[in-house]
Length: 421
Length: 120
Image 1: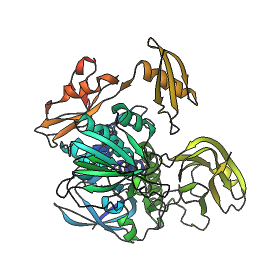
Image 2: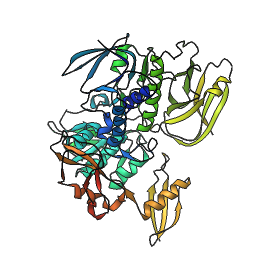
Image 3: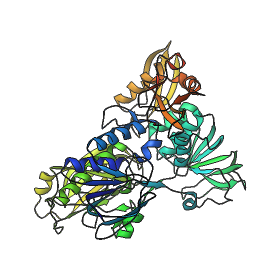
Image 4: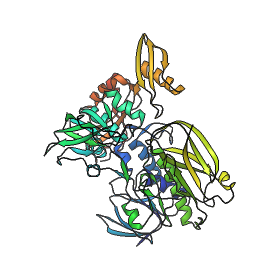
């Protein structure tokens, strides 16, 4: 059996940043396990620009952002295995993995960092009726085909869902010579960034139909067309509003789901609102010594925030293996998400482990205008900031200060909520 | 006097901006809620630019294609000309980040460079 201080599952942006931070914070031996043939994860297929504005103060493409971290990882001498799939993580932190050259491997870790990322919601999960012809792709699959493998998956395209990957692919397919006819979004607002709606749809005259969905896919062998209909406030199609679009390809950009099969098998407690592990301020899950960061924890909009979060997870994993972590969780203070706030990460804080400042991240459940974000320490309001707009598609941040938390005697609960103007 | 409507990209609010121009000069911006909206509208109406990203074929590499970008932003109306200039381009592996793939693409004065490494 191999032995490492820290094993990191996944070599995407979260795994890379966590590994580098763990090394910088004194972890002696670190192993990154990646199932693809190269490090970098989803960044490798995100060839558009806009990455790294916060981290490097310049606009990089996905592969360039990944390359900077890969270079740092290699310079730091951190070990990694490619084409290696993790099959199981046991409660004793024995990681079982396999690849074609070494067969089955068992690796004992003193700490594990979960950085498996997320995957796209599939047609099956969306319950779109009709036959199962070729030509229905998730937006990310199409992105990989076009940007990494050099194939154009179709010529006349309809996109369901206005997530950022769908918007990015509307532009990409258009530039490659396809005709993108329409983007249909079930909700009355887009989950994508405004910048992407303007630069990927408006720039090319592609219509965005809000409160619309695909009600039928036509064609038996290959997609021949789709029928789109308007939906009412209960998201049910309105009879009589159907429009037929002649197309050979349907792309789905309908949400991302953290990939937590390994975490669940291991017995990590999952937050049903994020589909990711519940974590404390150190990004440690309910299983001691198992940490989580990046899109496996909760789906992010910006890779820069994934890197920040993963650095914190890597640092705390290093402190854990050096036995510098407070193990008593009895003084953990729960964080409640209420009144419009859908979830927070982390779920608890412990003053004995907390840094001087901690960035709490959250999302709201609907579009809210002119309201206040409030933080309460028990009954005492310590934060009250006006926001012109809050939308589910944009992750929000609040910095919690240890000093402020420590000033409240016997603090039992932190609440984050929205308040009316 | 001309009026153009734009959606601001500064934040999720997405203000609907009305820009009044006269002979290429911006007269008035309305509909914005903050200063960023006005700055964006002035730039977008007078001189809209974009970074263009795409991919080209690689020969002899461990990947079929290499991703590329314009090193700087180019005028928005030149997007399709730059894409056209990339059609049929094949580069020989190895390719490194920053290598020039097409110089002075579509007479924009801007080079198209590789954004990933493709080894043999």
